Length: 119
Image (cartoon, rainbow, N blue to C red; front, top):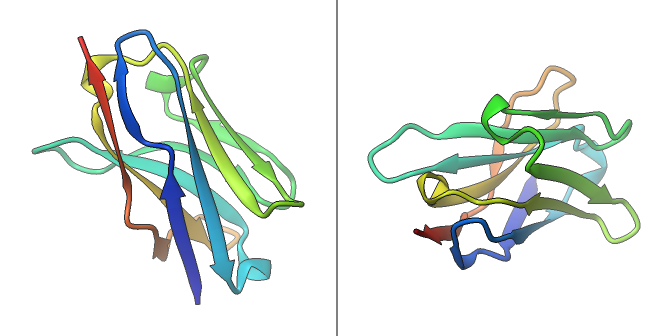
């Protein structure tokens, strides 16, 4: 089992920045991908970014490319999502998720952290 805890959400003005953190615990050695997803009120959950825990290769949704950066600190066993130039429509609950499959399948999820971007 893998447990995930997110932090770093909050209220920020449009154009501002936030950094989200995710701490995995449990069978962390089995994690291959850690991703960030978000769900806005009344909308489907959507992919934001992912990182291969072992190679560091990253992938982003087109909507956040150039503004968001996913990174990992293997020594601290943490994953981060740096979010810059935030937009009001990016207000959502942001979730950290983990995949232990080489083909990403996110079976483990955190509780989420609220990000609110004011206009």
